[in-house]
Image (cartoon, rainbow, N blue to C red; front, side, top):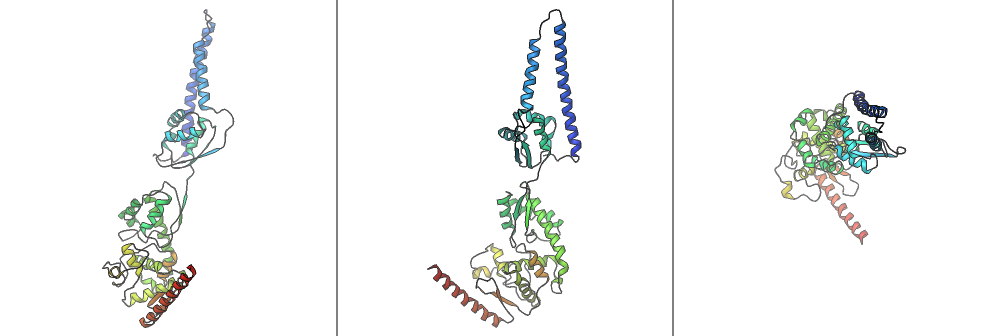
Length: 385
């Protein structure tokens, strides 16, 4: 599909000039037939030129029937045009909506005025019982269609692709593949195999005709902007991290913290473990290996040798495990100063954690969390009865 001309007024001028030429040509033919009629009437034979007269009247009626409406212009008719939609399809829909009378005349005039070369995807406004010239000119005025798409915090590339497949019908496989495009990654300074962690979670508005590349570019550009706005907030602990390290740590914090207010504390625990060369022990990194985001983890899974397994490997995994929020990224850069090196979920429905300095204290709190969890199960079971 051709791009819209840079100067729309110039295009409209050319369109009208072409139309005027056709009108002048038609007027010339009409004048010729009128002159012919006058000469015939002045001749000796005094025969009235019925055949030319009938021909002229027929042509005039046909043009009036096709081009000019009978009655006043009606209500608006909105037509959504997808990428690559043909003029024939547009003409057919306009005919069905009683905007125009002739699909063929619409297609011919659109071709003559070259409006068919500049049709963009979007929403066009026509009018029921419109005249043909105005209907064709409406092809020059497009309104962008935008669909609101919300990408929650903490999703992987595959999960994000699934949302876009449902909302604006982007092929999920193409989306995942484009996230590994070396050109896109290099453009945004991502030294990794994919854009995992660099698709910023936010509510976006996209044209339904947007490509996977368009969406990825938009999300990564916003991620660049967010990083620029938060990187200067790092304290002494967070300041030692590179961008990739900060985003990787933030992605783990994002998956571990159910409460936003606990993110800096959890980040502080991970910073302490990194300094002490202890494995982070974050189960979400194991879940990422198997894309197993619910249910129990088995011993064989926890012992997997993948470099993403922070149960057995020290340091950060090779790359982020999800797209972290701004809050998680700030928490990775500004961890709470704490001596805690352990935490465990309370399992009381609050989403909060117990934090501990020693392993012995951690075991006690873990046991307390299990007891609370068992009591919660009993209460739920009684309520169900």
